[in-house]
Image (cartoon, rainbow over all chains, first blue to last red; front, side, top):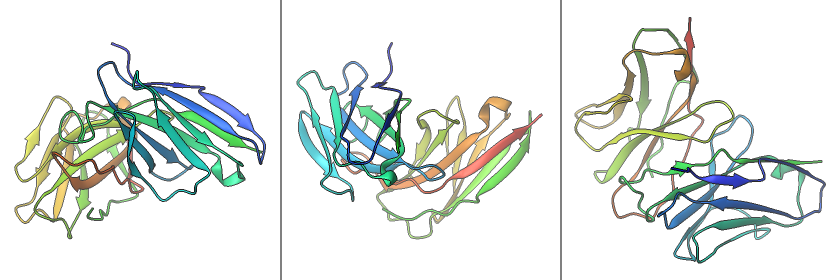
Length: 116
Length: 112
């Protein structure tokens, strides 16, 4: 079975540009979460979506937005990129917001964004 | 969610048991202890979780102290592939939509 897939795997942008990252959850999973991982730190929660509705938002500026589509795939959008947005962006899926096994999330390999 | 404290790094000899400690002295009664690991350049991977009782699965064992203020993840026979950052996370469990709050984790290096 396919796991969580993310695209692109790597990308380079310049300051001020916009980026869209995509995530396809595991088949049957209806909840998608996004995390940002800066080099040397643990992942930080950005958004959670379930059934196309936002269920949670972390402490990130309004430049970050996301949405979930009817097929449960998701996009993370970041506007007006800053150097500090350089990070690994991880997508995680679960059957529902509480997780398939009391909180278990399945993570993708991530999209590594470099902002120059 | 309760805060956790883990050592920054640990080494373990291949074939030996790796014991990774975690302190969570402010844990509440309805908070579970979760362990995830992240192998370099990959996404985090779920290992195990528990509430009060010790737990074991095909990957590891989780030992939680009686007062629940600390726990230990045990990899019984560490291999080189177990080299990773291990995260101990405490969060409200079943029925909650709350996110995982990762700390800095423990870098486990399994030595040949």
